[in-house]
Image (cartoon, rainbow, N blue to C red; front, side, top):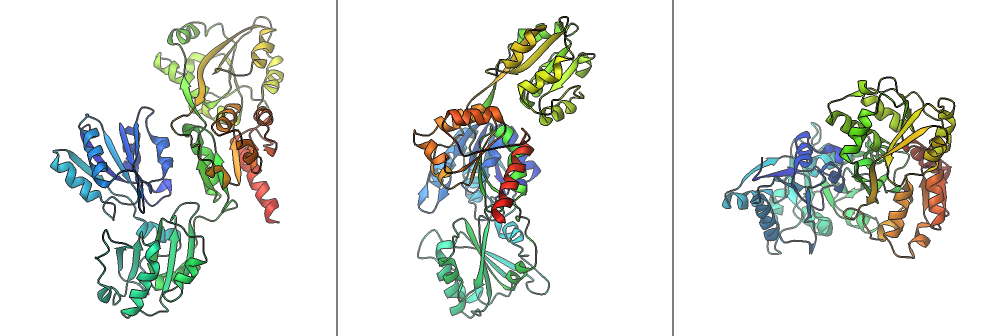
Length: 502
């Protein structure tokens, strides 16, 4: 609904913990206004023309004040736009969602709250801490870890008497004071305590102690904000209840340079092995197909003998155009379909097409070998693919029969989403590249010294063409996937990690 604002809870950090309704609203939003604690990977769900506004707030470092955020939300809603205000956790659990709702009502604007999982519950669960347990805690209590002004404080006398689980949010810098007050007002100094940093994310960290010593444990740890403090006997259960975040790549920081639209499969697979994935999209896909050209292609389908699909993007755009012209897979009856790569083959299956030919190695030279025996001078081969693709396949097939290239899209530099902060590279373990264009755009986004830094990291390449481009830029520390697919990249990372753990 236009002229309506949705205050959406993004959940505690894991992208998979958002509600179905919340995800659907992100997909429909004309404007997305998001916080620091909302996982930026949610941006992959947005429309291409969605307006993005980052309004993150860290301690003493606000991009916008709350008043400025309120005005931004109102102004965008008045432009007859569907506005999604994406907030970490739940909008009404220390998320200032109520204040934003009140401001919207004062400006005669309608709004709706879409609840989210609060870190006070979800964060504990991922750390193996049940917030309630019939033997240890029949209630739970959630508090802010710091107040807006220094002259306010909790009623420690009452809090110290509570028998349930105590959770303090946003109080990392105040841990010593919180525990000191709990002990001073009667809570046993032996009471178990845990601090959870980056709850539910792949870089989640947990430290444990007691009211008496947790400050000392914290001082020796690498724990950073955002973090939450848990006090109560349920903390002891974290030693026996499993965590969903363990995996073979646990603790490894891996940069993914694919486009936002394409990165989800690689990112989700890496995260399932416990990796901390940083998405730095170097490219985005721009459709360049001329409408009349595809209509001409449809009229020629009866003469075409082979169609070679070289990518998932090519398949998606091709069938989108076919359907737009009121045709489906039946229109390709009798044509031999060639797929480069298992992902391309699987995407074709979604449209009801089983590839006739797929080379064992996913490069142009192997494609030509696999198709050469099936074509002669009477054949007509079409290559619907990206602008800038290697000419080898087109040239070799053209020497035998009629061949036509249909340019469907091009990979362009993602100016909007690529991060040029070199510190992201400094602190990483691996950088993955899935095409020559990701290499070119990624490296050229940094200064001339970037190659020296990149060479200190392990570089994972999807195949020989990408590897060759890396070498052209002076990147030498390259590990190439045996299978030129996303699965091949994952296999390389898993094998390398196994070697390091021996």
